[in-house]
Length: 512
Image 1 (tube, rainbow, N blue to C red):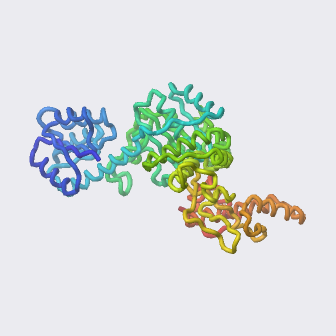
Image 2: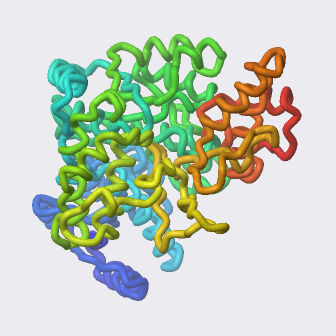
Image 3: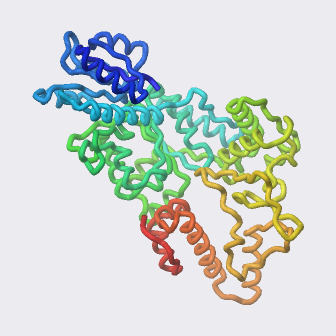
């Protein structure tokens, strides 16, 4: 972490702040005037800047302007006198994080600096784009089409909508669009709209003013301000709450927005790239997504192929992920035998590229020897168990053989792939003989055949209701009864899950 800079011509104030921050194990660097601080900015920036407003030579406001020109996300705390209201207002207008009024309480000053430090570290984490971020890999014709589209869009600021299954690499495409655009030198800010609680999402996107709500102790910049001049990537846009869709539409329409609790419009010079694994057209028809916003986002559409559509890329991706994993762990790179690589290329891998990456991490840690054979892969794969999270392979005895390490490849959302639903299937589902792998599609086929043979009417409706009931009950159990969270997990709308819960008489659901 970088040091906290203290700029003040009063040596006693510098000394008090230095000692107080040292007790908090926070490094500091002090300057007696703004000019020296401006010179030091040429070689690097602090984590937080604390500056007096009135000093001989350049003022704290001039230093604030210089800092914001080079480092717009750097929190600056201005020290001012109680009677100097105009200066305090000017400091906020110039982008100051907060101000300290003299004489100040040292404990409150340290608390304020800590809040600014947390803000600085948070912004550093979201704005930092690793130099090791790989280019998108792929030789399949479907990926070549994606590469050509990125090339055509390289000099454009047009809004792009990226669609594709979870784990297919939508954020990598968004980063590539940014990297090869005129905005490449400006921030790339990514936000997963499904991962932020709906009550916080508005503040996360647009920021908030001090006192806008309980706990808003300081003005905070939202992602639109953080991405100023650059690119804002909105992942899982299909899960955005309906009321926030209206605010996003306004930004895309006229380029202006308001912070939460704010009254002054702010101009957004941001390129928006959105992504979703959902069918937005269907969500529009269901009334869960604004049609006008859909058309605003769907200017240029890029569809990412699933890994099943580009199996010829699995070997090159596997070698890349094995090398990457070995580098991270400081070990020698594992090699796949021809048989093992052929086996990997035949797998469905519903979690797509992300699941393959997780599998390569497992191979690097767990596979014996440097050359990996098919038999060295997780038992859940080699014994036909599919991708059930934590589900042990079935042995020929009376009890399942539990492996020492359970393999749980993740899907595109970072969740374990769902287990076969045999354990929660209706009682009428026939279980396979012991020792044979459970396969829920085979169970479904057997049940459908049984009902059809018995002359059961409306077989589709009967099985469909059972299937939906099992999915929703399992999701509610996973989210401890929170139906909105369950809807997000299942990829359906809040209105849809509420209607289904009522239709299927499912108990135990509650509002988030």
